[in-house]
Length: 249
Ligand code: AMP
Image (cartoon, rainbow, N blue to C red):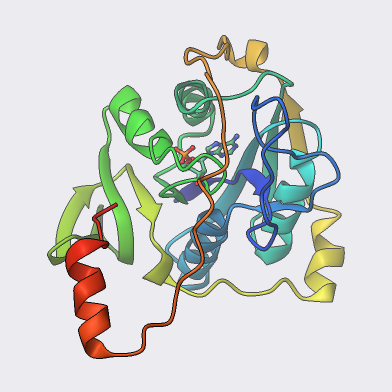
């Protein structure tokens, strides 16, 4: 079974994100970029499935600027077998990514797609669900456990009230939550080996997809600054403040 793993290049999770002065987005110039953390978990899960003999090939796909090839290299160093870069300078929104992935699925015929539940840059949490709808495939979102049994994926999902287990007929889409696994670090020999693994570069037009944005970004703003706290001298003062000053935000 082939596994497709979409990996997004995002601002590194350690970087304090800054909003551009004109409110048109967040600053990415000169900022450290990395693989979306939920996608690292997806690559790790796919590699574990290959190590168990369930998967035969892992294809990492990234879409966007040419630098997304670095994100694919990271996936290859973690254990993916080959990469596909869909190169475009158009700002890609979830529906466009889902349509492009659908076209890649038609070419590659994977039995399973493992992807992040959300990208930490815009927190859309939409691409996996949209792709499932476009393909008509089952989806197991927010997975904290994944087991393949024959032609089914048994997915334990993190839901508000606890854990829900669903059984999906393959081919299917699984989106990863934080507790699914702890991704491995790529070792130096594997980073070297990854340089020789193939990355195919294509453009949206090659897949017959128009990736033009459908949503208009109105503005991006920093959250309001938190005001400093005060120390109270007694419980009575605290209770009084809670009664008169505290408000639900
Ligand atoms: P989102 O719906 O934008 O929060 O993203 C959910 C998941 O879709 C990510 O964790 C990735 O697996 C995938 N994805 C979104 N955008 C891209 C992209 N430009 N390239 C590759 N994968 C992507």
